[in-house]
Structures are given as C-alpha cells and as structure tokens.
Image (cartoon, rainbow, N blue to C red):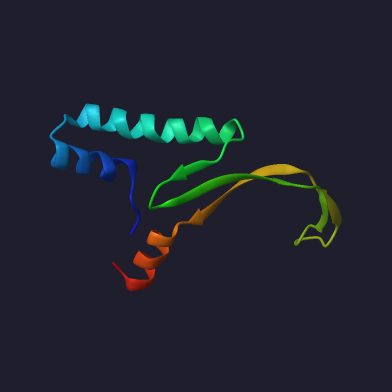
Length: 95
C-alpha cells in the first residue's frame, strides 16, 4: 500500500475538520518545506520518524550494462533516509 498526498489530506479533513483544499495546501506546504531544505543541502529530522540526509557521491567508473562500455558516473548529491528507533520498532512489530 502506498500513502499519497491525497490520503494525508483526507486524514487531515477527517481528524481536524479543515476543508479539503486547506488540507491539500497544508500537505503540499509540508512537503515543499522538506524539499526546499534538502535542496539547500540541509538535513531534515522528523522526530519519532527518521532523518533525510543529503550526501555527496564522488565520481566513479561504471559500465553500460547493455553494451559493456566503460563510462564515468558523475559526482552528484543524493538523499538518503535513516529510520528512527521508533519507526524501526513499529515496522518490526508490524504496527
């Protein structure tokens, strides 16, 4: 099962009684702030959930799997996620 922005907005409508448009706006603003922080190279820490961390990957040699040709994979930034202890425990228990 996937959780979409619409699912989160619907939950906000049910739990706190805002309109659907307000809930979508809140949800989009929340994810936009996370995206903006990560784009600036900052880590995002969500208490009881986990951390999103921007990491630098250096250039490295690789190969094209189709042709076997050697290529250079360029340096880049990637976002990694590290689950917090409460999230790890919840997933292990199946809650």
